[in-house]
Length: 159
Image (cartoon, rainbow, N blue to C red; front, side):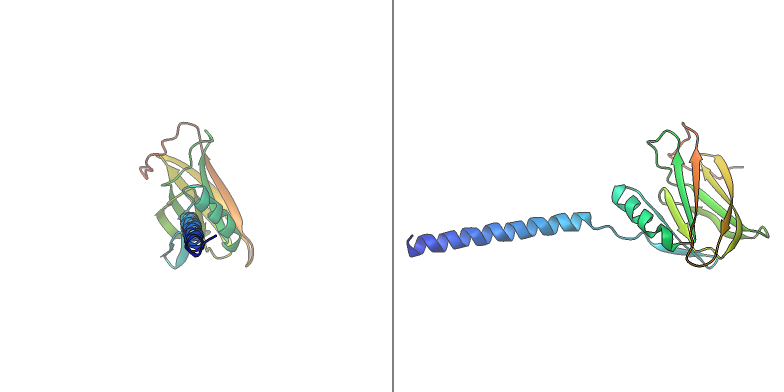
């Protein structure tokens, strides 16, 4: 191989390697999933999300770190219930989260230990659950599942 051929071969290898590195970097950038933002209402932190498989997997990973976990679904098995309106009241009836709009099928909250009444509304249909939050290091999960045909396009808080 002549000196010129070796130089061209080395250049071709360098170009191929840099292209491979850039391709891998692009794949890594596309797979990056960020935490949904943490919001605070009445001193209670909460985070909501789970749109898409990557973000849903992330929300399932962080669930154990939050005392209260709420999951929203429609019984048809195809619809993730997003844009649910959630209201949480403590045992005395005081509102601790007031008509919070879930940004996906998961919502996690840092509720203090105690008993709560949780109301979730999707498409004008309300579901209410009693939830008991235990001490530090525990997580209580509540699943809210609406009947097939519930309108998931918009949530309503009409009475």
